[in-house]
Image (cartoon, rainbow, N blue to C red):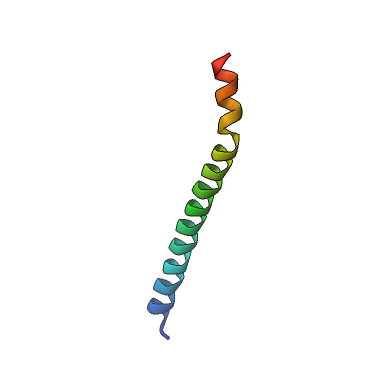
Length: 46
């Protein structure tokens, strides 16, 4: 493997890791909002 292909492989893995972190964070946030939504709705209806 030459230097250029190693560089591109590293950049590809880095971009994939960033994308996976964004997806995981978004999914986690949606799960938390789903669990807390009824509590906030009850507070807003008062």
